[in-house]
Image (tube, rainbow, N blue to C red; front, side, top):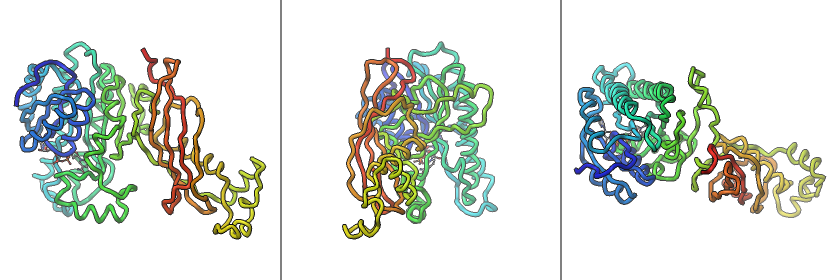
Length: 419
Ligand SMILES: NC(=O)c1ccc[n+]([C@@H]2O[C@H](COP(=O)([O-])OP(=O)(O)OC[C@H]3O[C@@H](n4cnc5c(N)ncnc54)[C@H](O)[C@@H]3O)[C@@H](O)[C@H]2O)c1
Protein backbone atom coordinates (compact mmCIF):
# COMPACT_ATOMS: atom_id res chain seq x y z
CA UNK A 1 0.00 0.00 0.00
CA UNK A 2 1.20 3.51 -0.66
CA UNK A 3 2.52 5.90 1.97
CA UNK A 4 0.64 9.00 3.02
CA UNK A 5 1.52 11.87 0.69
CA UNK A 6 1.79 14.75 3.15
CA UNK A 7 1.96 15.52 6.89
CA UNK A 8 -1.21 15.57 8.97
CA UNK A 9 -1.60 14.24 12.51
CA UNK A 10 -0.79 10.55 12.23
CA UNK A 11 -1.94 7.73 14.46
CA UNK A 12 -0.02 4.47 14.50
CA UNK A 13 -2.40 1.65 15.42
CA UNK A 14 -0.83 -1.73 16.06
CA UNK A 15 -3.03 -4.70 15.22
CA UNK A 16 -4.98 -2.23 13.09
CA UNK A 17 -6.18 -4.55 10.32
CA UNK A 18 -9.28 -5.83 12.13
CA UNK A 19 -11.24 -5.91 15.38
CA UNK A 20 -10.76 -3.23 17.98
CA UNK A 21 -7.71 -1.96 16.12
CA UNK A 22 -9.83 -1.32 13.04
CA UNK A 23 -12.43 0.50 15.13
CA UNK A 24 -9.65 2.65 16.62
CA UNK A 25 -8.42 3.50 13.11
CA UNK A 26 -11.90 4.55 11.98
CA UNK A 27 -12.64 6.54 15.15
CA UNK A 28 -9.35 8.41 14.91
CA UNK A 29 -9.81 9.06 11.17
CA UNK A 30 -13.16 10.60 12.03
CA UNK A 31 -11.30 12.99 14.30
CA UNK A 32 -8.82 14.22 11.75
CA UNK A 33 -6.01 11.66 11.96
CA UNK A 34 -4.32 9.84 9.12
CA UNK A 35 -3.70 6.23 9.99
CA UNK A 36 -0.67 4.02 9.84
CA UNK A 37 -1.81 0.51 10.70
CA UNK A 38 0.83 -2.03 11.69
CA UNK A 39 0.05 -5.69 11.91
CA UNK A 40 1.69 -9.07 11.72
CA UNK A 41 -0.82 -9.99 8.97
CA UNK A 42 -2.41 -7.95 6.19
CA UNK A 43 -5.70 -9.80 5.68
CA UNK A 44 -8.57 -7.38 6.31
CA UNK A 45 -6.41 -4.27 6.00
CA UNK A 46 -8.12 -3.25 2.75
CA UNK A 47 -11.45 -3.17 4.53
CA UNK A 48 -9.97 -1.03 7.28
CA UNK A 49 -8.47 1.24 4.63
CA UNK A 50 -11.86 1.76 2.98
CA UNK A 51 -13.50 2.58 6.30
CA UNK A 52 -10.72 5.00 7.25
CA UNK A 53 -11.03 6.78 3.92
CA UNK A 54 -14.80 6.96 4.28
CA UNK A 55 -14.23 8.60 7.68
CA UNK A 56 -12.01 11.25 6.06
CA UNK A 57 -8.53 9.92 6.85
CA UNK A 58 -5.69 8.56 4.77
CA UNK A 59 -4.43 5.07 5.33
CA UNK A 60 -1.12 3.29 5.10
CA UNK A 61 -0.22 -0.21 6.18
CA UNK A 62 3.08 -1.70 7.26
CA UNK A 63 3.79 -5.21 8.40
CA UNK A 64 5.22 -5.44 11.90
CA UNK A 65 5.57 -8.22 14.39
CA UNK A 66 5.41 -6.31 17.66
CA UNK A 67 7.14 -9.17 19.44
CA UNK A 68 10.25 -8.92 17.23
CA UNK A 69 12.17 -6.11 18.88
CA UNK A 70 14.76 -6.14 16.14
CA UNK A 71 12.07 -4.84 13.71
CA UNK A 72 11.14 -1.83 15.84
CA UNK A 73 13.84 0.68 14.99
CA UNK A 74 13.56 0.18 11.23
CA UNK A 75 9.78 0.37 11.50
CA UNK A 76 9.81 3.60 13.50
CA UNK A 77 12.41 5.13 11.21
CA UNK A 78 10.34 4.29 8.15
CA UNK A 79 7.20 5.65 9.79
CA UNK A 80 8.93 8.95 10.49
CA UNK A 81 10.37 9.06 7.01
CA UNK A 82 7.12 8.24 5.18
CA UNK A 83 4.59 9.91 7.43
CA UNK A 84 6.72 12.68 8.89
CA UNK A 85 6.11 11.50 12.45
CA UNK A 86 3.64 9.83 14.75
CA UNK A 87 1.37 11.91 16.95
CA UNK A 88 -0.66 9.12 18.50
CA UNK A 89 0.36 5.55 19.18
CA UNK A 90 -2.39 3.04 19.90
CA UNK A 91 -0.88 -0.11 21.39
CA UNK A 92 -3.68 -2.46 20.42
CA UNK A 93 -1.97 -5.57 18.99
CA UNK A 94 -2.52 -8.43 21.37
CA UNK A 95 -2.92 -12.16 21.65
CA UNK A 96 -4.87 -14.32 24.06
CA UNK A 97 -3.85 -17.56 25.72
CA UNK A 98 -2.87 -20.22 23.19
CA UNK A 99 -5.33 -22.48 24.94
CA UNK A 100 -7.75 -21.70 27.74
CA UNK A 101 -7.73 -24.22 30.53
CA UNK A 102 -6.34 -25.09 33.91
CA UNK A 103 -3.81 -22.63 35.31
CA UNK A 104 -1.73 -25.63 36.24
CA UNK A 105 -1.42 -26.55 32.57
CA UNK A 106 -0.24 -23.17 31.22
CA UNK A 107 2.71 -23.84 28.95
CA UNK A 108 5.89 -21.76 28.85
CA UNK A 109 5.19 -21.21 25.11
CA UNK A 110 1.81 -19.64 25.79
CA UNK A 111 3.25 -17.57 28.64
CA UNK A 112 6.09 -16.31 26.47
CA UNK A 113 3.77 -15.50 23.59
CA UNK A 114 1.34 -13.55 25.80
CA UNK A 115 4.16 -11.58 27.38
CA UNK A 116 6.18 -11.33 24.17
CA UNK A 117 3.44 -9.59 22.21
CA UNK A 118 1.23 -7.95 24.83
CA UNK A 119 3.84 -6.71 27.30
CA UNK A 120 7.44 -6.99 26.08
CA UNK A 121 6.78 -6.05 22.46
CA UNK A 122 4.40 -3.27 23.47
CA UNK A 123 6.88 -1.86 25.98
CA UNK A 124 9.79 -1.72 23.55
CA UNK A 125 7.75 -0.40 20.63
CA UNK A 126 6.42 2.36 22.89
CA UNK A 127 9.96 3.05 24.03
CA UNK A 128 11.13 3.37 20.41
CA UNK A 129 8.23 5.67 19.46
CA UNK A 130 8.57 7.76 22.62
CA UNK A 131 12.29 8.26 22.01
CA UNK A 132 11.55 9.58 18.52
CA UNK A 133 8.74 11.77 19.82
CA UNK A 134 11.15 13.29 22.35
CA UNK A 135 13.84 13.91 19.74
CA UNK A 136 11.74 16.46 17.92
CA UNK A 137 10.47 19.72 19.43
CA UNK A 138 6.88 19.50 20.69
CA UNK A 139 4.61 19.39 17.68
CA UNK A 140 1.90 21.93 17.03
CA UNK A 141 -0.66 19.19 17.68
CA UNK A 142 -0.75 17.26 20.94
CA UNK A 143 0.77 13.79 21.12
CA UNK A 144 -0.57 10.78 22.90
CA UNK A 145 -0.04 7.09 23.59
CA UNK A 146 -2.91 4.71 24.25
CA UNK A 147 -2.60 1.23 25.71
CA UNK A 148 -5.42 -1.21 25.06
CA UNK A 149 -5.14 -3.50 28.06
CA UNK A 150 -8.15 -5.51 29.21
CA UNK A 151 -10.65 -5.93 31.99
CA UNK A 152 -8.34 -8.86 32.79
CA UNK A 153 -5.75 -6.34 33.94
CA UNK A 154 -7.85 -6.44 37.11
CA UNK A 155 -10.14 -9.44 36.85
CA UNK A 156 -8.42 -12.75 37.50
CA UNK A 157 -9.52 -15.51 35.09
CA UNK A 158 -7.57 -18.65 36.02
CA UNK A 159 -8.44 -20.25 32.67
CA UNK A 160 -6.11 -17.76 30.93
CA UNK A 161 -3.66 -16.72 33.60
CA UNK A 162 -0.87 -15.80 31.22
CA UNK A 163 -3.15 -13.32 29.41
CA UNK A 164 -4.29 -11.77 32.71
CA UNK A 165 -0.72 -11.40 33.93
CA UNK A 166 0.45 -9.86 30.65
CA UNK A 167 -2.46 -7.41 30.54
CA UNK A 168 -1.77 -6.40 34.13
CA UNK A 169 1.73 -5.58 32.96
CA UNK A 170 0.27 -3.48 30.13
CA UNK A 171 -1.74 -1.54 32.68
CA UNK A 172 1.44 -0.74 34.58
CA UNK A 173 3.16 0.28 31.34
CA UNK A 174 0.46 2.90 30.83
CA UNK A 175 1.09 4.33 34.27
CA UNK A 176 4.85 4.25 33.87
CA UNK A 177 4.83 5.99 30.50
CA UNK A 178 2.24 8.50 31.74
CA UNK A 179 4.66 9.60 34.45
CA UNK A 180 7.77 9.48 32.27
CA UNK A 181 6.24 11.47 29.42
CA UNK A 182 4.20 13.94 31.42
CA UNK A 183 6.87 16.62 31.31
CA UNK A 184 6.95 16.38 27.52
CA UNK A 185 3.20 16.91 27.39
CA UNK A 186 2.57 13.48 25.87
CA UNK A 187 -0.74 12.20 27.16
CA UNK A 188 -0.89 8.51 28.05
CA UNK A 189 -4.12 6.59 28.44
CA UNK A 190 -5.16 3.07 29.22
CA UNK A 191 -8.36 1.57 27.84
CA UNK A 192 -9.59 -1.65 29.42
CA UNK A 193 -12.13 -3.28 27.11
CA UNK A 194 -14.66 -5.65 28.60
CA UNK A 195 -15.98 -8.44 26.39
CA UNK A 196 -15.97 -7.21 22.80
CA UNK A 197 -17.21 -9.28 19.88
CA UNK A 198 -14.15 -9.72 17.64
CA UNK A 199 -12.12 -12.53 16.09
CA UNK A 200 -10.26 -12.83 19.38
CA UNK A 201 -13.41 -13.77 21.27
CA UNK A 202 -15.06 -15.70 18.41
CA UNK A 203 -13.85 -19.11 19.63
CA UNK A 204 -15.50 -18.56 23.03
CA UNK A 205 -18.51 -16.53 21.84
CA UNK A 206 -21.08 -19.09 22.91
CA UNK A 207 -19.72 -19.41 26.43
CA UNK A 208 -19.51 -15.63 26.77
CA UNK A 209 -23.08 -15.14 25.52
CA UNK A 210 -24.25 -17.48 28.26
CA UNK A 211 -22.14 -15.83 30.97
CA UNK A 212 -23.22 -12.33 29.91
CA UNK A 213 -26.87 -13.44 30.13
CA UNK A 214 -26.09 -14.74 33.62
CA UNK A 215 -24.76 -11.35 34.72
CA UNK A 216 -21.02 -11.41 33.91
CA UNK A 217 -21.16 -7.67 33.19
CA UNK A 218 -23.47 -5.04 34.69
CA UNK A 219 -24.79 -4.28 31.19
CA UNK A 220 -25.97 -7.63 29.88
CA UNK A 221 -24.76 -7.44 26.32
CA UNK A 222 -21.63 -7.87 24.28
CA UNK A 223 -19.39 -4.89 23.71
CA UNK A 224 -19.24 -4.03 20.04
CA UNK A 225 -16.55 -2.42 17.93
CA UNK A 226 -19.11 0.23 16.98
CA UNK A 227 -18.75 1.66 20.49
CA UNK A 228 -15.26 2.69 19.57
CA UNK A 229 -16.61 4.84 16.81
CA UNK A 230 -19.34 6.31 18.99
CA UNK A 231 -18.63 9.72 20.45
CA UNK A 232 -16.49 9.15 23.48
CA UNK A 233 -14.19 11.40 25.42
CA UNK A 234 -11.37 8.87 24.93
CA UNK A 235 -10.49 10.18 21.52
CA UNK A 236 -10.87 13.75 22.63
CA UNK A 237 -8.43 12.94 25.37
CA UNK A 238 -6.16 11.39 22.81
CA UNK A 239 -5.49 14.97 21.80
CA UNK A 240 -5.37 16.32 25.33
CA UNK A 241 -2.01 17.89 26.11
CA UNK A 242 -1.94 16.91 29.75
CA UNK A 243 -0.85 13.43 30.75
CA UNK A 244 -3.31 11.24 32.56
CA UNK A 245 -4.41 7.67 32.68
CA UNK A 246 -8.00 6.85 31.93
CA UNK A 247 -9.95 3.64 31.75
CA UNK A 248 -12.75 2.76 29.45
CA UNK A 249 -15.71 0.71 30.47
CA UNK A 250 -16.33 -0.30 26.85
CA UNK A 251 -19.61 1.56 27.04
CA UNK A 252 -18.31 4.73 25.50
CA UNK A 253 -17.88 6.20 28.93
CA UNK A 254 -14.44 6.83 30.36
CA UNK A 255 -13.67 6.32 34.01
CA UNK A 256 -10.75 8.17 35.42
CA UNK A 257 -8.19 6.36 37.48
CA UNK A 258 -8.68 8.59 40.49
CA UNK A 259 -7.43 5.87 42.77
CA UNK A 260 -3.96 5.57 41.24
CA UNK A 261 -1.41 5.65 44.03
CA UNK A 262 0.20 9.03 44.38
CA UNK A 263 3.72 9.09 42.98
CA UNK A 264 5.95 12.06 42.21
CA UNK A 265 4.65 13.70 39.07
CA UNK A 266 1.20 12.22 39.52
CA UNK A 267 -0.03 15.47 41.04
CA UNK A 268 -0.89 16.79 37.61
CA UNK A 269 -3.50 14.04 37.28
CA UNK A 270 -5.89 16.05 39.39
CA UNK A 271 -9.22 17.35 38.11
CA UNK A 272 -10.73 14.35 36.37
CA UNK A 273 -14.19 15.81 35.83
CA UNK A 274 -15.18 16.25 32.21
CA UNK A 275 -14.74 19.84 31.13
CA UNK A 276 -16.67 21.49 28.31
CA UNK A 277 -14.14 20.72 25.57
CA UNK A 278 -14.03 17.02 26.59
CA UNK A 279 -17.79 16.49 26.40
CA UNK A 280 -19.28 15.26 23.15
CA UNK A 281 -22.88 14.90 21.99
CA UNK A 282 -24.02 11.32 22.42
CA UNK A 283 -21.87 10.63 25.48
CA UNK A 284 -24.09 8.51 27.70
CA UNK A 285 -23.80 6.99 31.14
CA UNK A 286 -25.98 5.26 33.69
CA UNK A 287 -26.02 6.34 37.29
CA UNK A 288 -26.11 4.18 40.38
CA UNK A 289 -29.48 3.45 41.92
CA UNK A 290 -31.53 4.58 44.90
CA UNK A 291 -34.44 2.84 46.58
CA UNK A 292 -37.39 5.07 47.39
CA UNK A 293 -38.50 4.57 50.99
CA UNK A 294 -41.36 5.79 53.11
CA UNK A 295 -38.84 7.99 54.91
CA UNK A 296 -38.13 9.78 51.63
CA UNK A 297 -41.81 10.61 51.18
CA UNK A 298 -42.21 11.82 54.76
CA UNK A 299 -39.05 13.90 54.66
CA UNK A 300 -40.03 15.47 51.35
CA UNK A 301 -43.54 16.21 52.57
CA UNK A 302 -42.08 17.87 55.67
CA UNK A 303 -39.63 19.87 53.62
CA UNK A 304 -42.04 21.03 50.95
CA UNK A 305 -45.23 21.19 53.01
CA UNK A 306 -46.90 18.95 50.42
CA UNK A 307 -48.86 16.44 52.51
CA UNK A 308 -51.34 15.77 49.74
CA UNK A 309 -53.21 12.48 50.38
CA UNK A 310 -51.88 10.58 47.39
CA UNK A 311 -48.38 10.83 48.91
CA UNK A 312 -49.40 10.08 52.47
CA UNK A 313 -52.34 7.70 52.45
CA UNK A 314 -52.16 4.19 50.94
CA UNK A 315 -55.94 3.71 51.07
CA UNK A 316 -56.54 6.99 49.23
CA UNK A 317 -53.97 6.07 46.55
CA UNK A 318 -55.41 2.53 46.19
CA UNK A 319 -58.88 3.96 45.65
CA UNK A 320 -57.37 5.81 42.68
CA UNK A 321 -55.99 2.55 41.29
CA UNK A 322 -52.35 2.75 42.49
CA UNK A 323 -50.81 -0.12 44.47
CA UNK A 324 -50.02 2.31 47.30
CA UNK A 325 -48.96 5.86 47.99
CA UNK A 326 -47.18 7.65 45.15
CA UNK A 327 -44.00 9.67 45.63
CA UNK A 328 -44.05 13.39 44.90
CA UNK A 329 -43.01 14.00 41.31
CA UNK A 330 -40.58 16.65 42.50
CA UNK A 331 -39.04 14.10 44.87
CA UNK A 332 -38.30 11.97 41.82
CA UNK A 333 -36.69 14.95 40.10
CA UNK A 334 -34.62 15.70 43.21
CA UNK A 335 -33.47 12.07 43.37
CA UNK A 336 -32.56 12.17 39.67
CA UNK A 337 -30.38 15.22 40.34
CA UNK A 338 -28.75 13.42 43.27
CA UNK A 339 -28.07 10.34 41.14
CA UNK A 340 -26.42 12.58 38.56
CA UNK A 341 -24.25 14.19 41.20
CA UNK A 342 -23.09 10.84 42.56
CA UNK A 343 -22.47 9.16 39.19
CA UNK A 344 -19.01 8.00 38.18
CA UNK A 345 -19.09 10.32 35.18
CA UNK A 346 -18.80 13.82 36.56
CA UNK A 347 -18.96 17.11 34.69
CA UNK A 348 -17.00 20.13 35.88
CA UNK A 349 -20.29 21.78 36.82
CA UNK A 350 -20.67 25.40 37.85
CA UNK A 351 -24.43 25.60 38.18
CA UNK A 352 -27.59 23.94 36.97
CA UNK A 353 -29.57 26.38 34.78
CA UNK A 354 -32.91 24.61 34.66
CA UNK A 355 -34.95 21.56 33.93
CA UNK A 356 -37.61 20.71 31.31
CA UNK A 357 -39.29 17.70 32.87
CA UNK A 358 -42.21 15.31 32.59
CA UNK A 359 -43.64 12.84 35.04
CA UNK A 360 -44.52 9.80 32.93
CA UNK A 361 -45.37 7.20 35.56
CA UNK A 362 -45.84 6.74 39.29
CA UNK A 363 -42.92 6.21 41.64
CA UNK A 364 -43.92 3.88 44.45
CA UNK A 365 -42.42 3.19 47.84
CA UNK A 366 -39.88 0.38 47.34
CA UNK A 367 -39.05 1.34 43.74
CA UNK A 368 -35.38 1.42 42.85
CA UNK A 369 -34.60 4.34 40.58
CA UNK A 370 -31.71 4.66 38.16
CA UNK A 371 -31.08 7.35 35.58
CA UNK A 372 -29.60 7.19 32.11
CA UNK A 373 -28.05 10.48 31.12
CA UNK A 374 -27.05 11.49 27.60
CA UNK A 375 -25.41 14.64 26.30
CA UNK A 376 -27.76 16.12 23.69
CA UNK A 377 -26.48 19.67 23.36
CA UNK A 378 -23.42 21.84 23.79
CA UNK A 379 -23.25 25.58 23.35
CA UNK A 380 -20.81 28.36 24.04
CA UNK A 381 -21.61 31.23 26.37
CA UNK A 382 -20.28 34.78 26.30
CA UNK A 383 -17.82 33.67 28.99
CA UNK A 384 -14.69 32.19 27.39
CA UNK A 385 -14.08 29.92 30.37
CA UNK A 386 -17.40 28.06 30.42
CA UNK A 387 -20.04 26.43 28.25
CA UNK A 388 -23.55 25.02 28.54
CA UNK A 389 -24.30 21.32 28.30
CA UNK A 390 -27.79 19.91 27.82
CA UNK A 391 -28.36 16.50 29.37
CA UNK A 392 -31.32 14.25 28.52
CA UNK A 393 -32.50 12.09 31.41
CA UNK A 394 -34.57 8.93 31.59
CA UNK A 395 -35.39 7.92 35.16
CA UNK A 396 -36.36 4.25 35.31
CA UNK A 397 -37.57 1.82 37.92
CA UNK A 398 -36.33 -1.71 38.48
CA UNK A 399 -39.27 -2.81 36.27
CA UNK A 400 -37.77 -0.87 33.36
CA UNK A 401 -40.60 1.71 33.31
CA UNK A 402 -39.54 5.26 32.55
CA UNK A 403 -41.25 7.22 35.29
CA UNK A 404 -39.71 10.61 34.61
CA UNK A 405 -37.78 12.14 31.73
CA UNK A 406 -36.59 15.48 30.55
CA UNK A 407 -33.63 17.75 30.06
CA UNK A 408 -31.28 19.64 32.30
CA UNK A 409 -29.05 22.55 31.19
CA UNK A 410 -25.80 22.82 33.09
CA UNK A 411 -23.11 25.46 32.98
CA UNK A 412 -19.69 23.82 33.12
CA UNK A 413 -16.08 24.94 33.23
CA UNK A 414 -13.78 24.74 30.25
CA UNK A 415 -10.33 23.35 30.98
CA UNK A 416 -8.76 26.27 29.11
CA UNK A 417 -10.52 29.51 28.12
CA UNK A 418 -11.82 29.67 24.55
CA UNK A 419 -9.40 31.49 22.25
N1 LIG B 1 -12.16 -8.60 22.16
C1 LIG B 1 -12.19 -8.46 23.46
O1 LIG B 1 -13.16 -8.82 24.13
C2 LIG B 1 -11.04 -7.81 24.19
C3 LIG B 1 -11.20 -7.58 25.55
C4 LIG B 1 -10.17 -6.98 26.25
C5 LIG B 1 -9.01 -6.61 25.59
N2 LIG B 1 -8.87 -6.85 24.27
C6 LIG B 1 -7.61 -6.42 23.65
O2 LIG B 1 -7.87 -5.59 22.54
C7 LIG B 1 -6.84 -5.76 21.57
C8 LIG B 1 -7.46 -6.07 20.23
O3 LIG B 1 -8.18 -7.27 20.34
P1 LIG B 1 -9.27 -7.77 19.28
O4 LIG B 1 -10.39 -8.33 20.07
O5 LIG B 1 -9.56 -6.72 18.27
O6 LIG B 1 -8.49 -9.01 18.66
P2 LIG B 1 -8.12 -9.39 17.16
O7 LIG B 1 -7.46 -10.72 17.25
O8 LIG B 1 -9.28 -9.23 16.27
O9 LIG B 1 -7.05 -8.28 16.79
C9 LIG B 1 -5.72 -8.31 17.24
C10 LIG B 1 -4.83 -7.81 16.13
O10 LIG B 1 -3.48 -7.82 16.60
C11 LIG B 1 -2.68 -8.38 15.58
N3 LIG B 1 -1.49 -8.98 16.15
C12 LIG B 1 -1.41 -10.10 16.91
N4 LIG B 1 -0.14 -10.35 17.22
C13 LIG B 1 0.60 -9.38 16.66
C14 LIG B 1 1.99 -9.09 16.61
N5 LIG B 1 2.89 -9.89 17.21
N6 LIG B 1 2.40 -7.99 15.96
C15 LIG B 1 1.51 -7.21 15.32
N7 LIG B 1 0.20 -7.42 15.30
C16 LIG B 1 -0.25 -8.50 15.97
C17 LIG B 1 -3.57 -9.44 14.91
O11 LIG B 1 -3.11 -9.80 13.63
C18 LIG B 1 -4.90 -8.70 14.89
O12 LIG B 1 -5.05 -7.91 13.74
C19 LIG B 1 -5.93 -6.86 22.10
O13 LIG B 1 -4.81 -6.30 22.74
C20 LIG B 1 -6.81 -7.58 23.09
O14 LIG B 1 -6.06 -8.23 24.10
C21 LIG B 1 -9.88 -7.43 23.54
